[in-house]
Amino acid sequence: IGKVGDSPWLYAAPWGFYKLLHWVKRTYDPKAIIVTENGVDVPGESDMPLEEALNDTFRREFYRDYIGAMRRAVQEGVPVKGYTAWSFLDNYEWADGYSKRFGLFYVDYAHNLTRHAKASVKWFRAFVAGNETAP
Image (cartoon, rainbow, N blue to C red; front, side):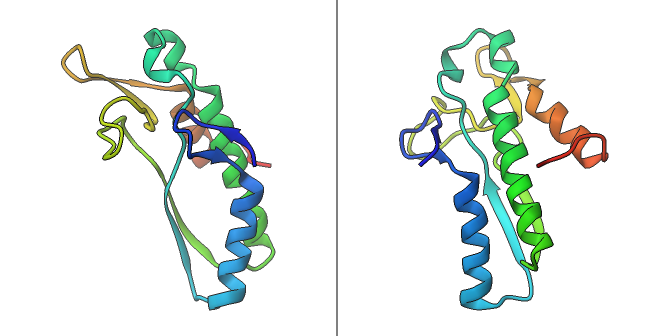
């Protein structure tokens, strides 16, 4: 299907997201679509040293590709009006506890919950400011 995240059930498939947005439009003809909790956990991130975990190219490419697919769908008439990333911070995942990291910010569970911006948050910030593009 696509690249697998750290969770074995999660595949990065922006082409599928694009098709899903069109399916929702065709099937339900909504006035607006709001995409919530769209994100990915990086393979092996929880076991990486901090500096390596902060360079989350896999997640940055995920957001670039998914937002690009969404942009294409919007240009073709799909009424997407909102989008949120999953997740702002690394957090507790119901099925996996603290072993999976989905956040744009790294939370250091061993050192007073200190937060560190990952490369993906820097990309997201540049994208929102109009200084980065999505395909």
